[in-house]
Length: 183
Image (cartoon, rainbow, N blue to C red; front, side, top):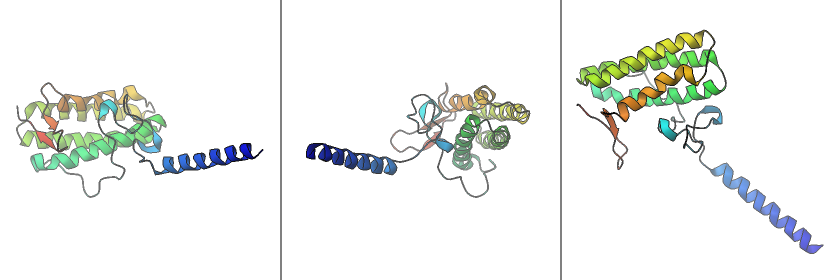
């Protein structure tokens, strides 16, 4: 009888330890606990890049008028908005998705302006296409249709600029900073 009681006590202690450790694990990913893309480990990563920042960017969104200096702020907002949109897609929140697509449309228009100012025509054309695709997808979402196919053109546009060929904006693996490649 004592052995069984001891075994139950050990199991209880282990269960409490597991629950405590799980509660302390970092929580990332898309809002609402939505998993990331393939290979993302549920933290919003995977093929679409890192998880969206947990906190919304503050202050006014950059307009692109300052060229390359505006790109980090623009891309931070693109990443955050894309992450929140993923959660809204899974929740089938058409109004929320439409709102995020409108935000992405203006952010990509600002990126186009910044890239044009820096004379990176290929990247500016990609940003313009992403802005147009976001506007088109917003119309579909406002009509009540939301699924991954609705937003695929926008989310896939990231790879065109970051992965190329040619890659216009690349991440330094040692520092994590992005640099603009004028080609």
